[in-house]
Amino acid sequence: MKEPATGEMTFRATIKGWQDMPAMGGGITQTFDAGQPAWAKREPLGNAIFFGTKQVDEAVTDRFIIRRTPALTDRTITGEHVIEGEGQRFRVKRVSALNGGNKFVVIEAELIGNV
Image 1 (cartoon, one colour):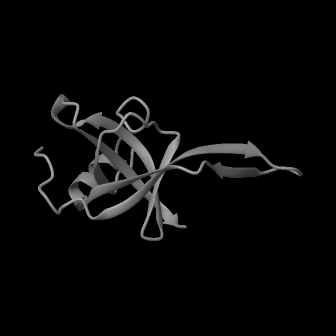
Image 2 (tube, helix red, strand yellow; image 1 turned 60 degrees about the vertical axis):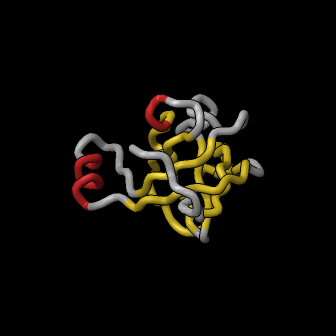
Image 3 (tube, one colour; image 1 turned 120 degrees about the vertical axis):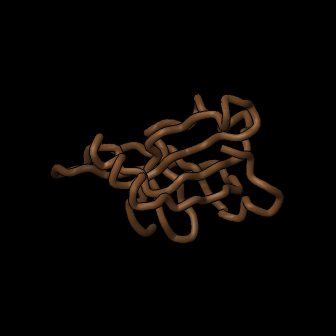
C-alpha cells in the first residue's frame, strides 16, 4: 500500500478510547475519552473485502491512514478505540504500521452508526 499523497488526508477524525461500564439498573453505558484529533485518508472498502471479512466475523467497512504521532501508533490504538468524524462512528478492528514503517498507521474499522 502506498503512502497518501499531498492533499489526500482530508477526513478530520478523532480517535477516542471506548469503555463499556455497567449501568444502574442493568445494561451498559458506553463512555469515550476526549480523544486525539488526526487528519486521515478514508478509503471505503469494496463489497468483496467487506464480505470476505464477514466470513471470519471481522466486518471491516473502511480503512483509514493517519500520520503516526507519539500518541497515535500501531501499538497505542487498539480494538478499545473508535474513530469519529463527519457525524459517524467507526469501531477499530485492526491496526498496523503502513508497510512496516514508522511514518503512517493503517486502521481498519467497521461503521457502527451516527454520532
